[in-house]
Image (cartoon, helix red, strand yellow):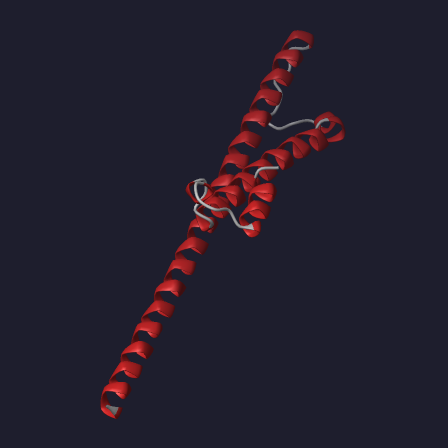
Length: 135
């Protein structure tokens, strides 16, 4: 009897150890996925900034070619830095915050098995999660 108890305790410890390793691997995988998404958000922001600069640069070249015969360099002039750079950064900031909010909502929904878990009885914790996630 004592031998069987020791074997059962040993098996339980082994299962708990494997469960801990599995949870650790899942957490690392989720962290990698989040990091990948953040890099994707950063890349999209860089592409958007490049598009803005190209459009501004083209517009400035067209305006300059109508007023003078000089060719402008492919950089933005000081007037952009003085007038539009803050607006561009603000626009990109809100795009970035929107993407990160969507990421948080997705992770929260996955962690709480939303919307499937709303079909049965709903706990106060789940109500709180839904209030935060969908505001």
